[in-house]
Length: 123
Image 1 (cartoon, rainbow, N blue to C red):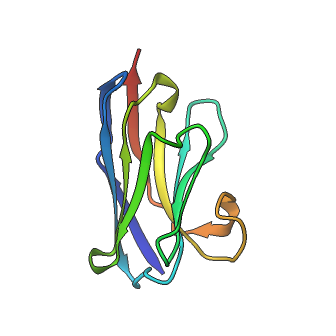
Image 2 (cartoon, rainbow, N blue to C red):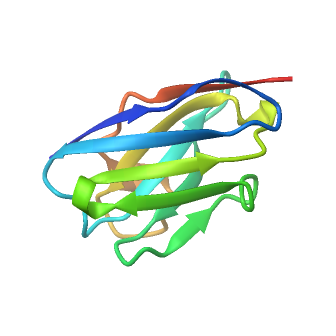
C-alpha cells in the first residue's frame, strides 16, 4: 500500500509554468508505472501523463510538447513539469500507482490515489 501526497499547484496566468510533485510513503513504487490524471469541474477524470518503471513516458495529446513527467525512485517521488499552461488545463491534478497491467491511460487500473492539487490557469 502506498500513500501519495500531491503538491505544487496554484494560480498561474496563461503561458506560465508549474511543477507538480507527488511524494509517496509506504512501499517503494520503483517497479510500477506512475500516472498523473486531472479532473476539471463538470468533467470526468482524464489521463495526463505516465512514466513506467524503465522511464518510458506517455502523454495525452492535449499536453504533449508542453508537459514533462519524471520520477526519482530514490526519493519515491514523481513530478509533472507543466509549461505553456492554458485555461483548459485548469483542474485538480492527482497522481496514482498503476496496480494492474494494461493501458497506462486507464484510470481504473490505478490505485492509491492522492487527494490532488488544484491548478488554476487564468485567461
